[in-house]
Length: 78
Image (cartoon, rainbow, N blue to C red; front, top):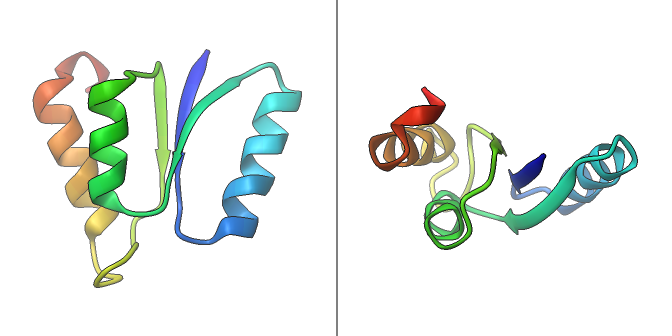
């Protein structure tokens, strides 16, 4: 299963990537903010996206907004 991870905390993101890879998942992309997450999903669609809810630049709801944007062009995930 192809996965894109998104989190601004590099240690958490890399740790999660390692755990998932050891479990047989393929980490195809990593993102540090909502905008780059949406861009990566558009260019290299995964089977699963795992995202933080609060990311740069505002640390409010950027992850939720990115998930909504992704869902709008990839509704099969919803």
